[in-house]
Length: 236
Image: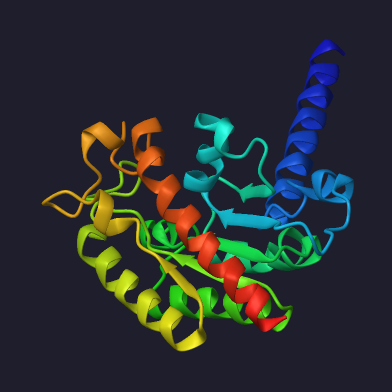
């Protein structure tokens, strides 16, 4: 009898765990991550220079490591660790468009190269970045397209050759920004070492910036945002 009861408990536990994992797997783009926070945000007023930062762990880590950069500014951080561009595209409407910012800052692509959600070509990454840009501009939102940060290799996904792929992707993003009237924010040139990697003084793992890394990024992105806000006013 005890063995039967124990067996039932184990089966019940397996079923419950499977249900939890299935529910998490179904929210592939993590659409629920910012659902409540988005609902609490009031509508943007025309006088508010609201800016949404869309990205992965590098964007998420920005507000975690340097919260002061976001305090007192109309900046909304919508970075989710590990995400790739198809995941960001899926949540772009709710986490960007429906917040009605004047500017969106898109920093994405390194996790695609790492293969976080499967194999991805540079063209596939480009397509997703293009789609996010077109969606934003169709809603009157100015776009800042950021270069992917340098990385010599990924500790969790070795052998993907980011040191060669990231510069090529950045050139494509830069060219596209010029053709679409988007602002290009070049983090790569200011941060890369001789191996096209992120140096130790700017990162603990060669991928994610530390406080010194973000200190380099902040004035660059603020200049880009300022340009985008001027463009927003010109088009109004």
